[in-house]
Image 1 (tube, rainbow, N blue to C red):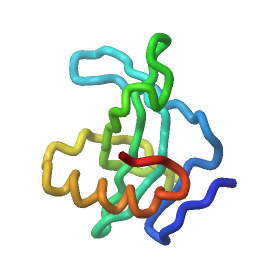
Image 2 (cartoon, rainbow, N blue to C red; image 1 turned 120 degrees about the vertical axis):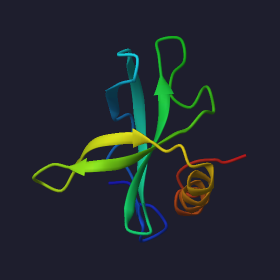
Image 3 (cartoon, rainbow, N blue to C red; image 1 turned 30 degrees about the vertical axis):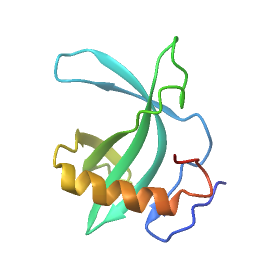
Length: 106
């Protein structure tokens, strides 16, 4: 099992976990799960977009989604895009610190 370097970070249990989401237009997008950060009582998931032409980590783009619903086991069941740039920046800084041993940030 992979381990992060902060108590507010939950890394993926294995590399390459990909989830499929549907955007507001109804299009499906595949995202590789990078980890979950707990920030001020909320949960935020970090993801890389994945396509056949662009494997994970190739674009350098990270998508931040807030967990809006948990299933009966307490696992994330629904997400929303974080649109508040100030919150996104705070949470991203937490993620960079917590995941510094797992990912390279430039």
